[in-house]
Length: 248
Length: 75
Image (spheres, rainbow over the protein chains, first blue to last red):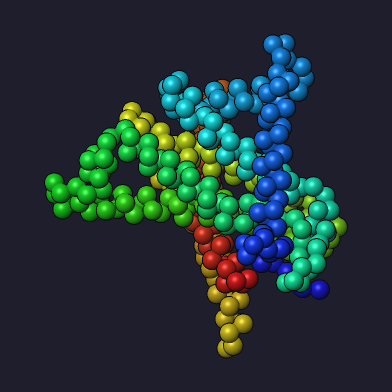
């Protein structure tokens, strides 16, 4: 028996020359499920909440209060909350799906050999990269809208002194490095969790993988939180009087 | 030394050396956060999420090393 671990997601089938990988396939299930769930929930909202609605209200309300305390402004928090909470919830839901028992045993026969039908969605670098690009581009647009095009360029190309010029260039590098650091952090953590689980199952299939599954559960909660909080911090840094500072 | 052995040594070195820094850094972050909570237990709710964020940022260099090691091994 050998470990079969691949960095790239496995291809299930092709539609008109576009390869459909298993991570992509599952992510569409998650999209449809979440969208339908959101519509159903919206329709069943009542003034006097039931049990389920109370739980959801508590979660969303707590998250909103946290966002407001990070942004320090009600109006800004209202604008940024849907983006960051959706990111958090999507990643969190994708991570939770990997804990359905027995799903990795389901395989499907394709042209490229037998591949698992299910794969941890966040362990596909493509999806993580797209989300990171959304986060980074939104940050740039916010900073462009706040300081104006000239101020935005002036942040990176500062000719007042050689030191300032160098620091401006370093800022530019830092903005580009954000793409890598944000995406690799999320992807690396989730993929490493998958590999760790596979290796532990390979070494000793009973009891040994259990503590690592708990570790994976912790990662599954903390990493989406970190991803969305960093997005939040980047956006709040791009707006004036943003006091939160971080170097990622 | 053949290619395969060099790959394994490289991957081991990459993650082994790369894990030193984040380990020290996360230890410092956790110890300081616990100290702060011990001094002021009411601030737990504010400190804990910030500590997790700081830890995840500290961890990122370790994760880069891990990604490099995994790419050496599996790609």
